[in-house]
Image (tube, rainbow, N blue to C red):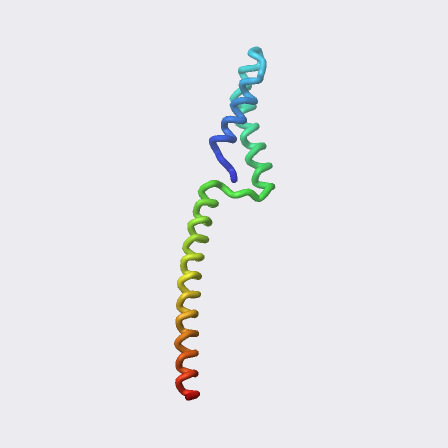
Length: 89
């Protein structure tokens, strides 16, 4: 999962590691570092935390619906069995 804040922290750490005499280009290096990290993470086909959370909620709702449908099917199967048993007598 891509965390933009974490990417910025890593880029800042790289920028802070630059010697004082080179600080004039620190912002450019920080931005390029962020760009490289974001590009490499996108190549890994990872999702953002927000996308992950959305899909988690979708999965929870889908499981709830599936459980409800399973209960409905079980009830219908029981009623069908009772009807078949009653007509066989």
